[in-house]
Image 1 (cartoon, rainbow, N blue to C red):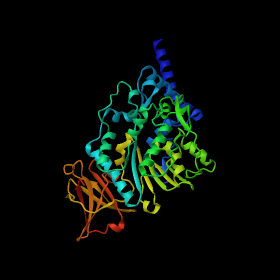
Image 2 (cartoon, rainbow, N blue to C red):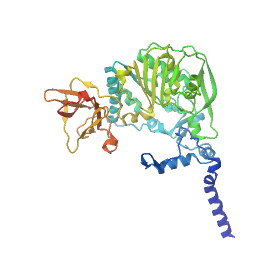
Image 3 (cartoon, one colour):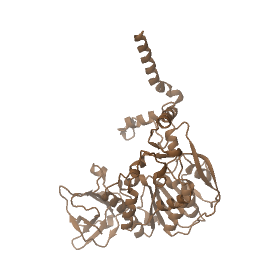
Image 4 (cartoon, helix red, strand yellow):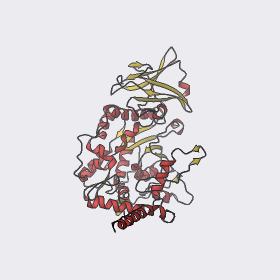
Length: 472
């Protein structure tokens, strides 16, 4: 009898494990969960040869295609969050229906970056500002605060806020390096004191009311004449499907309230994205929805607007799109930190906005922005030469000469900037390097002491290249 029960158990267990695979041809789904990017069935062999990432890509596609995946995730997470009171699927379950992303936990509890890392982030932004201003553009940098920065009171009791966060440390450093910074954190806290709800309870993002306040704050900092939409009527509807709710309960997400403004915008048209089957209003509605699709590059034209703007942004900027397309004649808005300004002189953007969410601040120094190293008049500091502990390399690229490497950490102080000197034997020309590590080129991990500078071909005709350190 016992043997029969064991056999039946094995058969049932095996059948349950195989069920998703057997049902895939009939009930498969390619719908991503939460903020997942949709996965496509991978090819083992492509035009470029054998796909070395086939295994990882197949696992991702297979997981997303699993029948009843959303229902299974929802059932499990309802038990974990509702009954056991545990976080689930990278979502922190807070008080009174508030949800937070686990990605923001480290910042919230005060797990801060080093002084050198904070200096490097501010320095990277400052160099972008310098390049923009040397090419006649106005530049501002701003940070979208994490939800638990503005609403810490709804975090679970197991999380204790730190004494200081990376954002607060960075704000101090940005002021010290004279970066044109738009402080949305202080502005939103002031509005919160007036009893206004500014973030979506089941989403990682702020709501449309906070987006309107943030838009005005940015435009004021740019000293641009703009519509404020002061007094615009609005409706609050409980119809927003929050991304955190979709991650937690993908088959049965919880709605939260969202602001909808009654504003008549000027005529505009989308250059990108462009779909023949969709009108401009339909494209904007899609971009403003909870789906976050078609938005890698957005370009608009508005004959009644004025000036041009280039924006490097993340998903928080999405809710500000209508305001900027309504006020600028030309917009070019990129996502995923694609700050590529190599053609800024030709494009002639009047305004440049760099926006990043608080929990992703450390990624600013992951990749060198697509700009040339700005020139500086002179440098009074310490010259470093290539040796066993100073890696200094040069490389010809399609856009110019790249000088990059990693410096001896014992020689670099927390507030040192890194400069490249080109010498022809008679004089030196200095350029400031980005404090980032060319990890792919150097086949190494990210370092606090990396540097990279792209120099125009016309400027690179030098007999000698050296690297200098200076706190200036």
